[in-house]
Image (cartoon, rainbow, N blue to C red; front, top):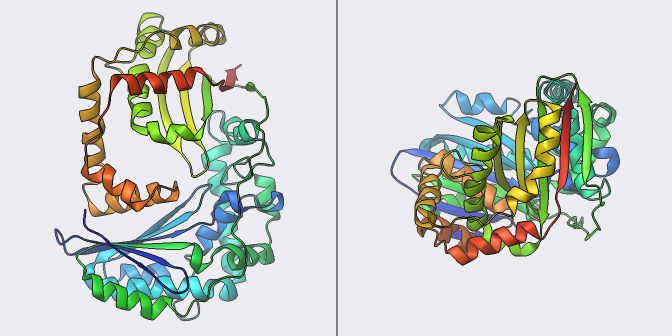
Length: 407
């Protein structure tokens, strides 16, 4: 994976990945402005700003139309660590894409339309209703961030915020968030596709150099003691029980990323998972069980989730889970699992749009570009003793149980 890295004087980091396989260009603007940067009265502000970033400026009042009329498109997402803005189109759109990105980054904070603000705020409230309030145990899962990390922690609330917090967000609060956190020195620009590195560098220098770095300080994540809450429980009228165990793992978990992915397969996959075979096939307590790893810049979460038929089965599984977890993990399939992880990684980065999203996600988690390049060019080397080490790491820490109990 060939790439070129350039840093502008104002702090913007530029990463160029030439790929002439198809005549397309994809860009990703990564800003370290996420839910972790919000104060208590700003919950949901970063996600709302993501929506508002598409509402246009005086020079480009219709951002999406200026792309779509020439075959381009855009998308975005916000998480706790930051916000990522994606664009794509024919490589002949490179100049236009970079100009549009620089224009909105430079001007949105002073040119935000008040009508657009109210419109997008209502869009977010509707999204909150659909994705949280109307989902099975949605409010329970939304509030679990505060239960797990503590509400004073930057990760202690959901990205979308609460209905109350979003309704209270005002125009001035949003423009303040833009001015404070949408700073050029907190940005990384990725360009992937059929492009010439010198042309990209010249265009980025021309359009982005006028943006001055902010005088505000970068938010830090304090080392707060997590609450000793072991159970987060709520009852709802549903047809199944939700059980979800979440572990906050220490920093050494970053060095065991692939081994933890392997452990997840050995616990809950249909082919190899002994939890899956015991809970879903033998006991028939649940119709769904899965596990996984969520990597963030300042935390690593391992989770196990089961959708259980009845409250009685939920109680039985709670009492039995740790006995099942303590069973020795079979590492006979290590080579096959390494091949599966490698195959999935290649498939998830095969197309240009998938590749830029994958790289963006890794950068947002704080991985270095050298580490990312290593993951993309070298198959994982899984060893049995390292998988055992990952297993022991999990057993040494106590998870919080999220229990959505069906009435």
